Length: 341
Image (cartoon, rainbow, N blue to C red; front, side):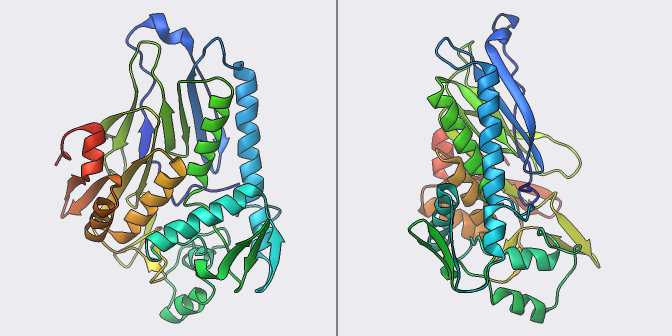
């Protein structure tokens, strides 16, 4: 299965609390396991929509297809077969794999390498990846050796084939869930569903209104280790939300905290005061990738990058024992007001 360990479930859909019991029977939902976590689909059943059983089967089929193509936790997946190939080899790949490689290349180019799908050797070295042998702090020489086979520039899509110049290993965990949300959302729309909320391992997208006329409401969690507290409530229609953070996914050695989020340019965990960042975008894949980019960049560089590129982003920054929230103008234009401190 694809694992969602590198993407903490920080953004959560609020329970579908409708204002009156009159409407409750018009919202359908189903849930299931996926990517080492869970998924939830809620939608307003309409006369033109497919029945629930069919939508559930189609969702499960999409997720099974994605797992077979992208999972680094099964040796027979398309990407793991490719990862086992030596340098200089090519392999025919499904359209979805090629699409994600190209999306990853764009994110890597735009961020000057803050995003990289080929960091699996580094993830394994630190104990975070599918072949990791326990969390550990590697030596500088070990990191340098692993980085020899890391770099998006060594990947190339050629027609229906994916090729590697070096013995790179691709890991889609940073964008797979967002891609899955977009796939399920597109299926729902094609099946006649005009109002829905799809959540997969914390990445989500919502469209339309609930039967009482209210928008789908989403809670952005405050960065607390042992409890879930809503820090900001936003209403979505046609938008996706992704949050990246390091306050749950980390380990400690000799009093030093090591995040599971790695900086591809150093080969080491990020080391700054950004606790979490939320990105809102029409594309869940894009929001998923951008939240990783901004998390790697940190509070100052990330905020400047998001502001320059008109990205709707909400930052939660550590200041001693407290947290400071900052948001971009694009975020405030969507949801009103400045960040809450």
